[in-house]
Image (cartoon, rainbow over the protein chains, first blue to last red):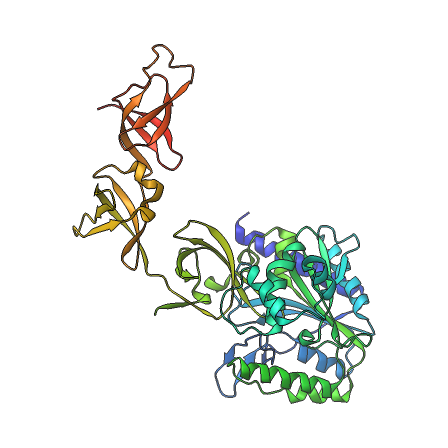
Length: 311
Length: 189
């Protein structure tokens, strides 16, 4: 079998397993627009602009559109489709990739984590049939670096990050230092673990997740790692439109401070949120990342039908 | 000052880290789904040869190192400097002991070496992978012992000492792999 046939078969098989999994659970497949009038505000994500009139952006995720569907009465839904992130290229990144995103009514974060792991088991991910290792973000820092991120100061974080090889004079934001330590040190410690789930990310990284009512310094956000590689990111969803608007504004302040263009806020999304998002949890999972695990591909290029340089 | 952005990083690129010239051995783009992107690189310090891991915030710029590898013929040493010449242009360069380092024990006049230039001065000298050198001193050979695989030390014309089979004689020319400092074969004149 040629390499391309291997890729095509692996893609088709995995998509079939995913669709069967959701059909059995009565989750409806939906298709939402790839081109949108609004880009995402997250300063760490860059959208491709289609510089035509009227201007449109290639979506970086179907999140806003899917939540608008939920606000207008949609049942449990999933989408398996292309998303685009400018500048993300590497062994595990391709600027165009396939995202599996789904939303479940009345699911708590932990119920959704269970479902993600069930799906991984269905896809025959090694170790996914066992209970995953579940750890909070704060506990992971405590366990591996011996620091409590609730109290540690920026000078200590900066010293630790530079000890780990961080270059450049900065200044680095607190969250960047945490990201650096997470990406270069903590994620590596997850490599011996088949499936690890990190929960309760700091408020500054809440994105569109609800804050934990028990400890509002943290969000009900989780990430799933297979042998240290990030596979999925999920939230118990924020339903408060006022708080969501504030987070968008904070994102834009950070963008300006970093010399990035401001992003106009998606008012349709905020209006939908204000009209009422049902209690739900949602998660996005990188289809090609999962394929790398199930098909044993060393690079995301092998998981793509045509990789970025050939597309 | 020439610079490279992290999105130009690839193996072989020469950059300045902590004032030293370095070469990128491996470059990996790492980014959490929600969070800052980084380039994690393995770099070799060209002065010390040490390989270390460094992490750059993606999008940052790093000073380029003006480093070039050139084939040069070794001419002679005056005791303080080792003199080399670019065969095509007859341009000459003088390398100090720090640049020549351990390579000095393999340098034979007229051999072609790879000289790494940093800001146009020799930074590193790499001898040819294989050199042919005369044995100036070794114990007398043992006849009929060619199959036993015994070895003895032999001093070469450049001062290097290598282990050679027992049957190899003083005054003979031998071929040596400079990367492992191992005897390869006898060379017939």
